[in-house]
Image (cartoon, rainbow, N blue to C red):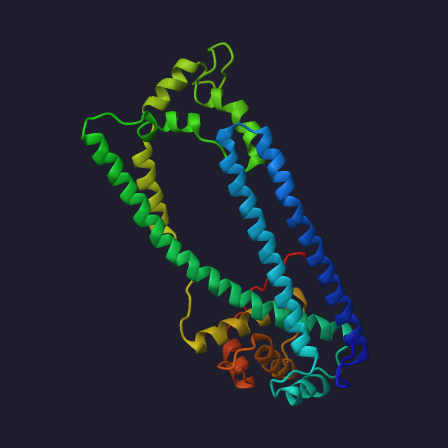
Length: 318
């Protein structure tokens, strides 16, 4: 693949190798995705009917995670190509300045590190913001749903017309509940009788104080019921405070710069000289790739003056 003349040949070779490795990773993930359905069907066929829905949920979760990794790979490929190739975005002069002026003097390896940091900062920042928004919405939904279900269970209980014991007794509920992760099912099914006190007294040895199934059953009788657990879940959700999420463009820009700086300094051991700060401004603008966000040297300087760069995270191995 041909790169513009302003990209050093060594940098172009290293970037091309990285992109090829990412594409191989994407293909490997696609093979795993295609294999999930077959393995999940086999597993569900060998499990009791009550476990089939749990296996299906786990299958969907694995598929979503693998698809997210594919999306991340595509984002990273698009970003590093924006930084090293000509695009119809009017920023080729900025790219020439980036390599010919601000990153000049760095060896090819350091330049590639810088480019990877720019892409990871842009996408890491975007993903974190998206996840924080979703977490805040889910937090409110969990609080509302848990309290409403707890209230409904108490109301049904007060009607004195009978109700499933699993809606009252935590022990009874655990007796029929199964883990959503198929790999945990066997261990849970093996230990559940002992944990719930359903084994004969001669077999159960929970601890020194609770050395018989009768004592275990007695302890379970005083355990919090399902409605209590739901109220506890609502309280835990209320106490869960997500990281602050800036809503203004200025906050977004500042956050992205600090993530970028954290990756450069803590992971790749860069010194944030004036030249690197100028390079950060150019690279961040191209990597973020939003027409409403232009990062300037002054933005970088102000974001980092007197502030510790946020710890950066390198993307998980693809």
